[in-house]
Image 1 (tube, rainbow, N blue to C red):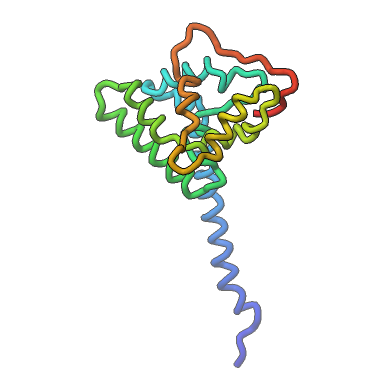
Image 2 (image 1 turned 180 degrees about the horizontal axis):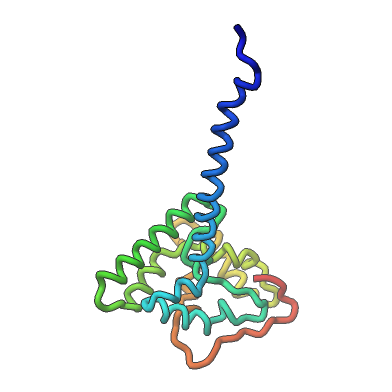
Length: 186
């Protein structure tokens, strides 16, 4: 006796249906959680990060002539298209921040700033500053950037070696860089 065709596909169809009904809400919750916890406003809910948030708001990474805003994740996490590294780093940073919140008496901004600068890679800056080698009428800056991006072995430099004080410095006024005529890009 042969098994009817509909009985052959019934069991796999049930598994697929149940899988979709379970996976979709789990994925949606995970995605929603990632999106909601990936904003500067969420980062600023922790009082240890409030200083960094306030100094970020007054920096040129928020106030610039191009109207572009680089948020916390743009600098402190790998690019989102590197999915595994991104989720791992985001989770690790979040857990670290929670642990520090509960076990550390005094949050040392200067020490944590140095740790963050030590961990930065040029790729994090180049996510936004892709056109850094095209700086019309600024030959010196163009050559300096070229020596960093195409560094000779033994002469490696990082973006933050020169651009250390762009963000997270207390300022009495907002830093604002006027859009330069003829320069079309970050």
